[in-house]
Image 1 (spheres, rainbow, N blue to C red):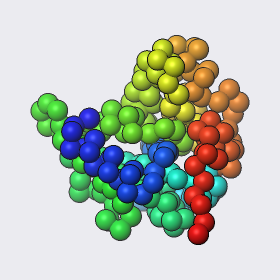
Image 2: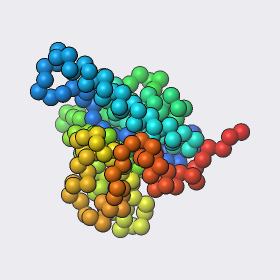
Image 3: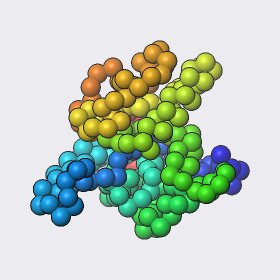
Amino acid sequence: MSIDCDHRIREFKKEHGIQKIIAFSGGTSDEIDGIPKDDPIQEKYKIFINELQEKILGECIGLLRGYQIAVLTGGTKFGVPKTATEIAKKYGLKTIGVYPLIGKKHVLDSGFLDLDICIEPSFGESQWGDESPIFAQLLDGVVVYGGGAGTLIECAHILKMNENLKKKGIPMKYIVPISGTGGVADGLHFIWSKPEVRSMCIPQVLVLNGLEAAGILRKQLALNDFIIEEN
């Protein structure tokens, strides 16, 4: 993480009293592969997918109100990043968006992101995925909803980081996949990693909705120690 990026994050957390960062990672596509884009079923599918996503993420983020947390996403105008960021703002939570330089034109309007971090490429041209190491370093816990290659990279980073955190006796970054949402979320239990690490940072039961996901994160991250005190 660059010195400037590290400084910005530290100052942001200090200014807003942020104790934990909870990320939402997942896919951005709302189309069915193999079916023409102008087929009426695509529009029906888009409506269903968006409503389901809003329901599950809304349940989860709604239960995370009242804690000293920020919500981290990819900060873009599509899929899970868009939905999670907009819901977080609706509930008055602080939001962070981390994205690569190539994705700058797709970033949400400034009114939705309290802190946006654009990651420059360390080598060559900017590519999607450049932001994944920073994304993984920032979070304390992550909800995984569907997801493709980008989400898989993020989860792989987290699992590898957790190996070292475990050795040092430092709390691991917790991963909560929402079962039934497809993609990475449904495959995380089968992704190769050290079994003892995976068993300690991923629920051993299927998590079927946002309420269950929020409940697990509240327990695993000890969020009751970070309740916002009302004046």
